[in-house]
Image (cartoon, rainbow, N blue to C red; front, side, top):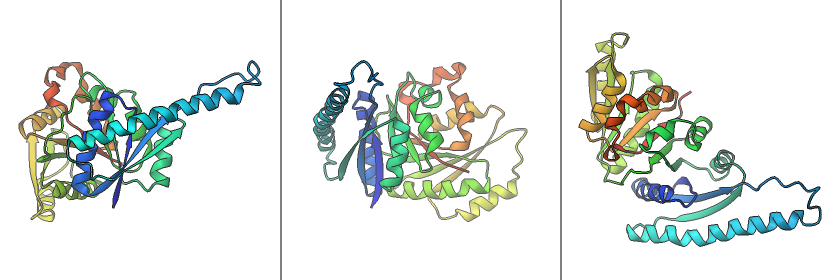
Length: 277
């Protein structure tokens, strides 16, 4: 059985992402490991030599009590969506979020990480200096980021952008596998610009290689790549957008202020990123 790591701070944003995590776990037949992290403040033990350990033990106990109180609330969310059969386990860790996730991924043999992200549009905070970006930079497994306003809908279309490079194929095969779990279609987009170096023969080779799979290839000629991506998501009703982690700089352009008119709440969708060397 696959394992999903779900870091949570028990916020509204995290609880919304938890619904997506439950549905993802149901689709791929996985269990969820709930992770809550905390960092203890730095205390000058010269000032409190006798009470030093008592203070730390009290703080740790308060974190444990919070964790213990919040778990039933998450189980109630699972029951509300008739997903109480999804196996849940729990882990409370001291240390930074990135450190805890890296450690858990290794020790708990995690296959996917799913976490919520804040922001007016969701995407803006995902790509600009957040915990999610730090995690994206460090972990070597797929990460599903769920914007705060992303309401769960049945997954019918998964978007995948490519420049038809060989290293994209590994991620595409994984995306097709996930789409098959959902009985969804992979909508694969290539934006052909004046500087593009992919010829028609290479595109045909890809189409032939993936013939018979639940995938549709789209080639759009445009020099405005970001705008083309947004139009693709809107007009193809993309439910999850896949990105390759080496393209993060490109996706930062999507949250350019000139495009915020398109980033309405109805546009907020989860982003599934794959690490690519």
